[in-house]
Length: 301
Image (cartoon, rainbow, N blue to C red; front, side):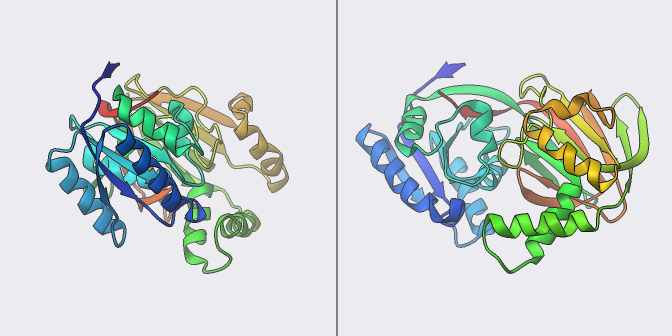
């Protein structure tokens, strides 16, 4: 790890993140950074595409660091700008899941403490995952790529217009659980191993958790150059209902229905299934996923 206090920070906020908590969190973080003598350039995109443009421009414009205020989706947006560059990323967690913050011990629900971390300039170099979709477009992610039941839930959540917030996601879970079915997957690992079986879900972790602390890949390390793959076999509904609570503890990997692998890259195929990473839609399957060592400099405590 290295430390170099940034003089200028480009700060990008998502006002809608965390049910509106990001806007006041941004105000508090900016005030703290300026009190610590850091020059802050504030940015707020009209939409995700505009925010991504602003992030790229801030990195190209010579900011000492890019900081985001929001959840894992906001982090994912920033990764597209900072991955593979020397510009470090700072995070003021203000989302619903905050799984990046959990992984790296970043202060949650404490914007001033998160600003202190950014101002101190202590960086850790970690891996990122890179996803290449069917059209050849590449996309970076930091935590977990989800396919199968998880991505079906996310698809349905995005189609629903009511209710808002977490309850919409919960309703989507219930609806997809009622439609639960075996999903045929074909997964090819870097060493040529081919896994063809019916699954409930397949998850690829650069870090351990998704969904607000679900330890789907409990042994994943963000600096080992490998991706952790968790495959959950197709099961009857009652068994699935008993199984899912164990994911929060990470003990699900001891169940006979769970298969785990480590690989530097893989290909995932399943007809009609989409992929999400860091909670964001990425692409329909098939996708190629690769671990890219030392792709991110992250500001950490």
